[in-house]
Length: 621
Image 1 (spheres, rainbow, N blue to C red):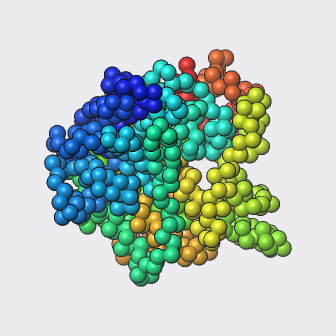
Image 2 (spheres, rainbow, N blue to C red):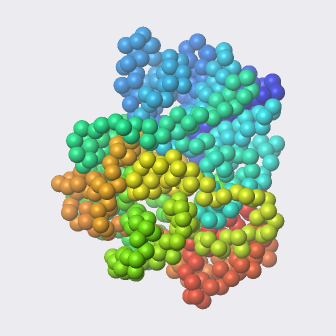
Image 3 (tube, helix red, strand yellow):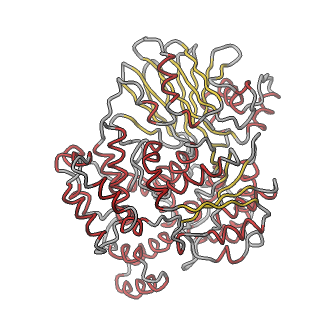
């Protein structure tokens, strides 16, 4: 639920209620039900509310403690708030509301920063302690909810659920960070802590931001590997079934209707199956494309909906929707964002918002249980590097297994890369590795200095040194693609229309247990997600469990050679294109023309460039 902004002045200047109110209006879409502003001397908060739990005025934020010492703003949901409330009440706490926000506030009063280990949920929140003049900010373990900040030592600290709120203050300079631009061109997203705006940072998942005596510090309070030595009762499949069912049930807590995105794949189907045990009928929503073929799973989704008695609705997306909505999408994402699935996600969110206020989604399953085919390919590639004599035989088997897939051929091309972290990062790059240095203007490359776009891959592989190779890959994706692309995609697309998305696979109990399962249990031959599939035997139809994974793909290649070609050409190759300041436009033109004439399929690269150009026009004019 919701969104918030905040300001802390280090120079003694009182927080400005008018500025905070204007900042919060920029994110009114996140909370259309209520708003509020509170100033506490040098610190101030503003809030936009999407009412989900305790719909009364008592749930209004910013919320102050009974004695006025503590003030909180909170975006998200605490799924175990009822249990925590009972625990606090037994210890003598008195509650004035039925909201999870007050539970959060009273937990902090009693336990301080240690309260984080008691929370099950998705959250970003800020608490001001007026007595100690202490600011405490936290982001949930997996990074489901976003938090951005700008620290100007000696002057002020800004923080918000979206960057656009920070930009309201005219004192904030809008400038491109060349390191983030390089990262974006390679991978289609910036990577925390960087954003495309120089100086504005993302608070990484599982981190706190604290301010004492004008000193700003960060601390990592959770890692999915923290409880790696714990023992789970039962087989991996039994553990997964028990924890996932419990997570879905806990995520159903709400005072408004809860629906689900349903694709017909294993993940969303499992969520709907377990939801139907708690509430019937479940309202489900599916999206497809008018080009049909491999871009649709509508029939599969329909079968699952029928099996579980859901009220099912479908939405068909066309190229006209892309033209009509892409500028709006660029604005909502704050940064150029190259996951094209943001378009159908936004459209199906708007569609669902006419019927429900909360939806469940299947994000996170692939990164926990090894759902992507690249994990099979990469696992084999890692072994093949140490057995060059068998390379040709194994490569042929890979290609035969996936119909000579482009992904398999690309990975084989990287087999000489060493160490594994570099090979994996380069394989996941959305543009050819050698193309980006040609695409960036020399002065931009110089400004980026020695920035290594693979730094996070190397860091994750190092932190996961004790894991088997498959789990190293999963750990890396959990800390890169999942948080910086997939979760951001869902949060911005849903909250743009005032819809809350919940992701039960990313309940931290499920995540921790998943990393206690060996990679050899998750992948066998060409079969992925074995513990999850076994957990769902008897719950989901066999055809759902055995069918090949179907990615949420968008027909970019077809659109850019057909109905979107004029729009793309007029935008990217315009004489007044803003990206000319950053990119070599002869290279941009070559990428376009080679796609148009069929020499290469550059749909993904063109989407990256199109989003960059539109972002520069929107945010840097």
